[in-house]
Image (cartoon, rainbow, N blue to C red; front, side, top):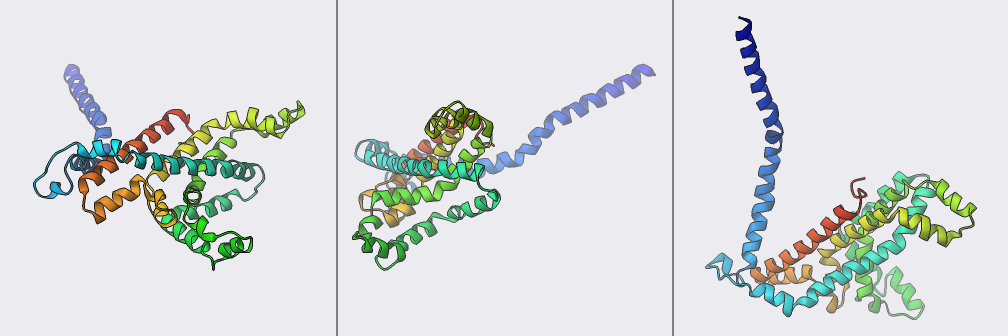
Length: 292
């Protein structure tokens, strides 16, 4: 009798163990299905379309690798301009973001209110681009100030620095939050100790603050860079003719206006690869700053 009960109990335990082992997989199954249907399958179609000629994918597909050959030979300027504008915006974000983050962490009492106000640029680059375009017109506030000091507002309106500045404004919160998170882990006593040992402000910055916040700087820089790789409305509204030669803008023109879906898809794949590389570097070298 005791042996039979032991066998029954063992059978129950084995069945319960199987259910416990299967439960995590059952929980992630809906997310897996949604990811496959809404992400992996569309990306697979995009890859296939990128190897077709013009709009032939919609009718009788003509498969070719000419799209990628054209991008890396005749259109490599698109990749260069895309990286240049994104990198320039990162430099601007870093120049203004580190001082802002330092005063936010060390000097500002109502930090949550300031962080809430910083979220406004994230509401949309379209509104940001239109706003900057209107304030730089000759009859607008900033335009009148430029005219008063003898400058032409139109030279600022359609220029590469304006595009980079607008991109930087849109991603400024990412830089500030990343650096501020790293600064919160740096004790004020370290700065006081450096000052007591005779270090001036520059030495304290370069030998104490900068090394100890490098993970936050890297995380913020890569976040801003990756985000601005795919922005197309800012160079389209604020840039000169050369500034619109970025992957995001040419994708829109090729796909929506010219119906060249093959080339648009190939440019999208290149842009996605660039963003994936940036994301990997962010996760690999930021040492947890992105997750904090």
